[in-house]
Amino acid sequence: MRKEVDKLNRFSPEPVEDILEAIHAITHLYRARQYRAPREDGAGLPKISHMEDRVLGYFGARPGATQRDLVLHSGRDKAQVARLVQGLRDKGLLEARLDSADRRSTRLQLSPAGETVYAHLLHQGRLLAARALEGLDAGERAQLAHLLARVRDNLGKGEMTAA
Image: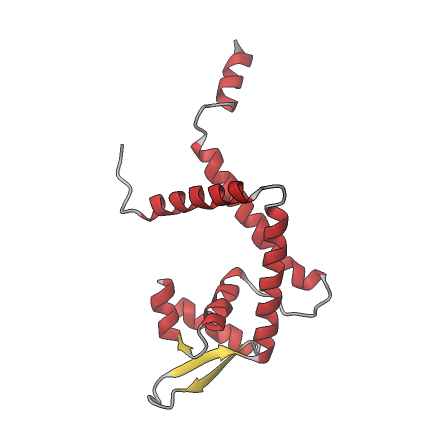
């Protein structure tokens, strides 16, 4: 009887927690490999965290945006964004300049070193994505993207209520 119970527990028809845990594990493994690579390949690039990468990406796509723009875009706390931006400026990866129209506002953009780091991380991300999706044909990739988008949309819907 014990073997049958164990079998039922392992192969439940809808292992929701297993699916979400797999998504988490994949994301964690992807990020760990992405951020370990610059130190392993001898590129001599500074250590970059996931959140720092996100900030670099934001200003890489929107040169001249402000810290306030990033706060509004990300929904993150102003203090957290300020610490991230300052840390990237201290590492020489972000440059700031006063807005010519409004001297109270500071515009941010990637420094040449920031562009190098960001380009390297983008390249590394593409290599890892190709490895992760190896063996999946175009239809399977499209189906996976569609299903994950639905999961994301479901999580984005209002507050969770008790069943």
